[in-house]
Image 1: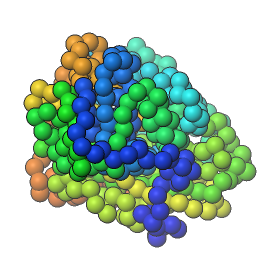
Image 2 (image 1 turned 180 degrees about the horizontal axis):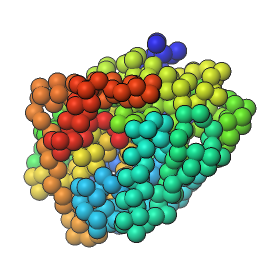
Image 3 (image 1 turned 60 degrees about the vertical axis):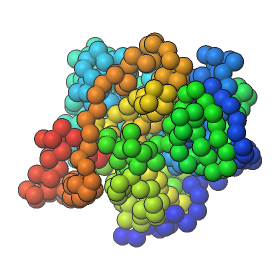
Length: 461
């Protein structure tokens, strides 16, 4: 099917509704700072605020190639949560104690957002994972069992089909899991609020100042230079072409469609509590409501990048937008009359184990990458970690496993793109067959299983 609205023809609706503040002046000439931050999205702004709060005298300068939040921070689905829903993945990568340490450390994100002065449409209604096919049941079982084994059963509460229906009715939902720490926000309003808060904290921001490279003493931009003792690189999917991060990072496309306001239809299906919902597919569907009664449906099944390039495939891929709209009609048939008004996409940065990692290179350059589509909440945690690294602190943040673990590299190009594309196709074939209650072909099942045999993850779950 063709999407009702082609993506890439307009800015994300979040950015239109939030109406960003006037741009700050581009960097001109040479300025001095204690810390220079490249990237004015969530990670860069949280890092800047954390540094200023810990060291009020620190001079912090942020440079952004466009406007703060024009990248993934202004294009995402607005799911605000930490890592309780990812305990199984954490456990496999960093062990029991490490998984609990990371999940508990990330718990502060929702509280930090709630402290912002501006209205960011924050709703703390929990996050609901649903199973829509028999193949997805095991995903929910693993998450619930992991939480029980780690002594935190209240972080992943199983729900029966009838209990799920009390929150959102759909004939496709088999059962579910409720995660306490889930919330939703308006991404455009959040990045605007963070930018305002950073400026109020004394952070200097220069927009429309693309970084051309790093020098021994800081950052070189198109029309100036920031001389700084420490540099933080926080450019999300654009880091997949940056040599220090490229071996362990690739970019994927993720797309959403947004309906007209349909509060009466939401009443009819009982989805009035504001829960964030996602399913158990490898290329998951994620969906939520907005303050004005719209429904956003996203699909993480977009194209895979090549050699870190961020090009039109990440903003104008009609087939992925069509899959998101198809999921809206299939998973929520009660919204069949809802007209899709907007569609957009963007790149996400994906690591080999689907967890972010933080590191330092050349002694004074620090970066974080690999949020893998789950960055709204974890970028707050990333800001705390990067602030510690930039300030040279040996503390609870810099000792987290997200900093200390070894992240295995992805296959080199062109194997990464070719192999990833074949596996992506196999996964989509399997999941489409399972949606029809059919057995997927053997070749597709083998292709889906191959990354796991190699210790890698493909997909957005």
